[in-house]
Image (cartoon, rainbow, N blue to C red):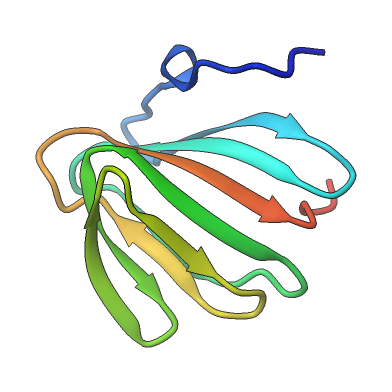
Length: 108
């Protein structure tokens, strides 16, 4: 198993839906990469019993957490506690790349 990742080697895109891939899945944590092209959205949703964060690696977007909506750019961390609705739209002009972690990870 690889424990070191260069996120740029795992990027991708899909024309009909945002791209996501899992970088690491353990018993207590899931780490992934989400890539959204301009205009793509991850609809607001919630994870019962699991906290989540987004770390903006590149690009910019508009994030929703609970009733709050804010723009964010590279270097920003967005936290979504368990049970709180959250989502993101790439409102920029380039790909939005996000490091995402969920703990505990979703059951597969």
